[in-house]
Image 1: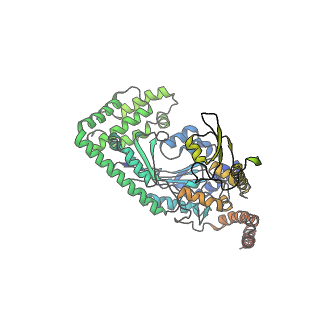
Image 2: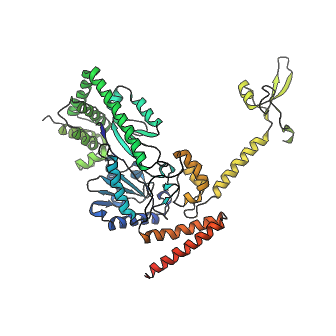
Image 3: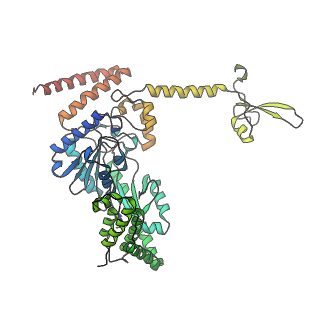
Length: 330
Length: 179
């Protein structure tokens, strides 16, 4: 399955009775954090994970979390007093005082949204026993932005679609998804820039459909998109086998010999190698390895790994070294 | 200004369909000028330049309407976070949960546009820990009571007042440790 699934069922409840983060005073922001901390303590969640307060959420720390897809860019850049909770296995997390008071997130493995949704629900319920959520029978869960009202849920599938990109069919597929009311965006890069052939497909609307209906739609569309990718890969293998292999092996060779690698270049090369692995032509590297590297080559992660503060050009050199060492011939 | 106003129902000299809005002066090759009254569409199609708008009324009416809406929006305030509906429209963000009550009428079409629906069908909250809910309830009931009074919905206000006094009593009992 050519998917890595990531930020999936997110719930965005706010607490009742307090202004939303964008309009809250410092005291009110602190209150939200305290109330949440108490709830996490009383429900036993702190035994299964850790809570980072605003003081511990430095620029580099939050960028690290961003690169691991655990927090959003808004959270990184926010000027509010934030907090962040994550379970030990990093499958469940909670952002406090991003655009809304609370934002849950669960990782989905494969397309197993039901399980992920279940774990968010359980987590959500545990906390709800200690907190009062802002909810109206008409508008559902009340969020700062009307685009998140109702279920407040965003189910996203992360799809690796190199063959569709290579065969130039990607535009059609993405437009089709948008037509049905789904949002599609490149995972890396701002706006419509797509790097590394990775796309995030998620529901656009959150109100007027039940949670299960939303999940069903996203899964159905994701399955279709995966099918198109599979067909495109078959087509490549059948008609352009050598050319595709050439491309993937060249990428691998570059990664193994470059002395300078920028984050962007590394991501693009790794994504191409991933295609090679998925097609079965590259056997010496595993999918897990590539996925791991895709996270570790990013700036904040790399610095954390190397344990040093580096300037961009130093990072590019060290990145190249790190990648070479990781992809050594067995 | 009065002199430029044309009697109602003057139709366009060119198409005869739409209401005439503009006066256009045409000068032919002999230097003779004629004035015709045309609708905006014909004027645009023929590339006529505006000489002077006839129906100042329309422009004035539209401007006045816009001002009224803006004023109305600015007057609609959420009692809890003090945000106005004008603010909400500008920022695209609500200030607190109570905004959704305070702005309900105006909010509904907006939500419908954004979401394609305005009624939640997903799961609901279950009743949480009673005292946490209680504390929030008093604040919220108070705010809703104020809104109801402001909206002159006295029947609703009466019901809310009862709820509020019950909630306050419960809270007092809790605070003083009465079971």
